Amino acid sequence: MKINMETNFQNIDEYISIQTPEVQILLEQMRQTIQKAAPEAEEVISYKMPAFKYHGMLVYFAAYKKHIGFYATPTGHSEFEKELSVYKQGKGSVQFPLSQPLPLDLIARIVKFRIDENLQKKSI
Image (cartoon, rainbow, N blue to C red):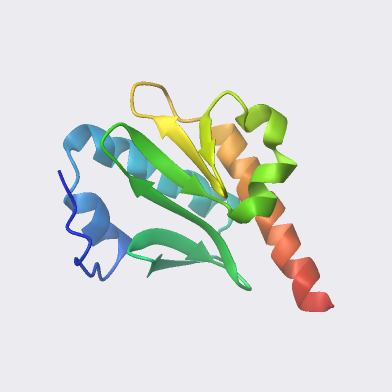
């Protein structure tokens, strides 16, 4: 489903609910992986995308026509550069094709890295 960029989602459930059933499954897998890796993180909508916040923003994700976009800020991507190199990337983003299983273990490790990074910034 094409998302109107003027849509103001109230929560992640609302965002996921308007996607196709196949994409809903992937988004729920992404969401559950992030929740498990960051159980204290808060679910938010930021930049009209699902996101998780814990002592600052952790990660964002979004559905597109042919991929799930994942945004772990540039540091989350640079730290896992080798493992992410098999995916199409932009500055601070990676594209997981809808035609492939999500790399859930990698996503969890990136989220945990971002938690540690946010906690280190907090203690400075």
